[in-house]
Every structure is written in structure tokens, then in C-alpha cells.
Image (cartoon, rainbow, N blue to C red; front, side):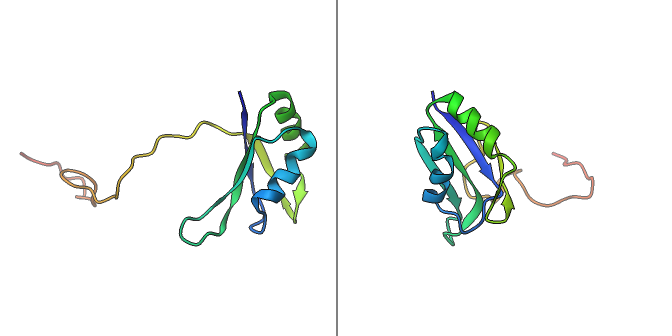
Length: 108
């Protein structure tokens, strides 16, 4: 089972290859990905690295957390499982979202 590692506070200039190179000395890398904004394509300043060997992943986390890369102190830890978020395009609907009513209760 692979270990998924969160890498935060990355320089916005860091790309996937540089992220992989950062972790390579600690063992095999299954994937390394810097997260980018869908619309602009610019880095969001964090990424994820997957390592197949958990002992190597733990060693990488211990060695790299709080180290400075490109003038930024990295925040590295095991990634939490992704939370399910509602899909769809906003907009409320029947009794859905929408602003306040100043504490009023709806009457039927």
C-alpha cells in the first residue's frame, strides 16, 4: 500500500519534477504532483507525493519537514484521506441555500 504525503508551502515555481527530485533520495516514488489552479494553471503552493514503501515515506517526512526550499519552510506530513465534497453548481434550489431571514422561522 502506498503512502500519500502532503507537501505544503511550496514555492509557486516548483513543478512536478522538482518535487519528485526532492523525495528521490529517500526511495522509490510512485508519483509526485504539484496541485495547480484549473483556470490559470498556476501552482497552488502544495502537492502530493506517493511512495510505495511506508518506511521510506516516514524517513522522507522526518527529514524534509520544516526544511527550507526556495526560501520557504516546507510543511510535510502524511496526507489525510480526501473528504467528500458535494458536487454540482451551487445555487440553492427549493429550500436550499440563500441568504438570511434575520432569525425568522418559515411557516407552512
